[in-house]
Image 1 (cartoon, helix red, strand yellow):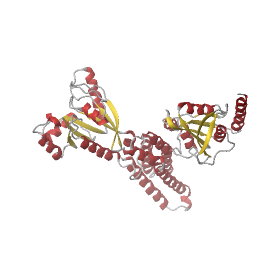
Image 2 (tube, rainbow, N blue to C red; image 1 turned 180 degrees about the vertical axis):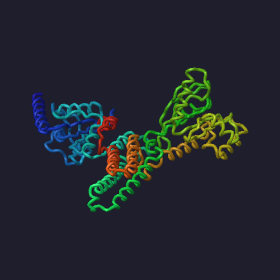
Image 3 (tube, rainbow, N blue to C red; image 1 turned 120 degrees about the vertical axis):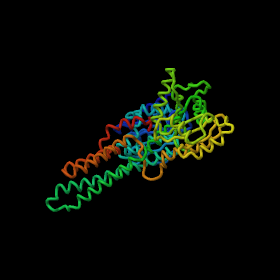
Length: 485
């Protein structure tokens, strides 16, 4: 017992010497998520990382950089063994944050993890990390720009293959490099314009320089404009395609929702008007994210509660990216034109893509052939299928139609230029294009004012990547990260 106390006192003195010798702020947190697991990763970042690693492993030198080493992990205050695990040493700047970093890969039991965290928290100069603080430090040291930071956040939250591909592409810097190229083009055009303003009277700058600047600005305006006109593909892929199931009461909307999500998410009843509020579920269809909403039956309701439900259903229809219109196959006309009119009377005029689902096909008798012909021959109809929530008839066909429509709305995340993924990108790019348009107007009257428009355009591009004026968006971006990232 005396020996243990002596070892503990010596451990505490050694820890104070090691950690107090290194100034600055060092943070630590669990980076592998919460809850019981086989292996938990505890990360540190800052000037005290090496000292912390030496304190907890009892070694005077850290292991070779970026190589896993098996070590006994002890509490420096008591010399008690907490676990036996793997440690990694990442000296800066070759680390995620650009600072000295260390990782301890320990067993994921809550007692082990909390013991290691307590031991780290008792070391001088170390404190628990705030949410997103590791990534913030990576941004501060130039390891990531803001678009890459946002891509990393999207990658952590990605639930489908298409989301993963888009987020990984953005995290690896493709979107940031595109915006950086535009910024460098603007910088060069601005430099040439200012050179013309300052030196043209001395005949040191040729007249054609000004026409080259004009051509560059026009080309950039067109390129950014085309980038903005992408149909919100990246945003839809990132947040999910909001799809509304709409139709009259008792046509099987809630049954369709339950069938698609494979669980009783909505109440199904033969009583008309059962669904009053919006029931929403998230699905993965063909690798694309789908946010599916079941809504109240569309009709002239008299009950005040149902009236509110119908009002909410119509509001959702106005905001939808895709509509699943459900009608009773036993109660619709078999002529394509009449069927299209029945659909038009149900849904408000809109350009939103639609799939028409004729449910209760299992109840059809002799009219199935006529309806099938109407589905295949109706040029004025959206994609239409005969369906049965009771038997599952048409489910595979519906999933194929949904996957095809989602692929069309979201596009291929690996094809072409990277897509816009954030509304703030659209906002700043729109302001950038507006400044380039104003350049064309100011250019005819005052070159100095025209140059100021190029500066504004470049500033808006810089705010996207974080190179200029990013302070107002940093907290919004980093607060969405979990602790340990």
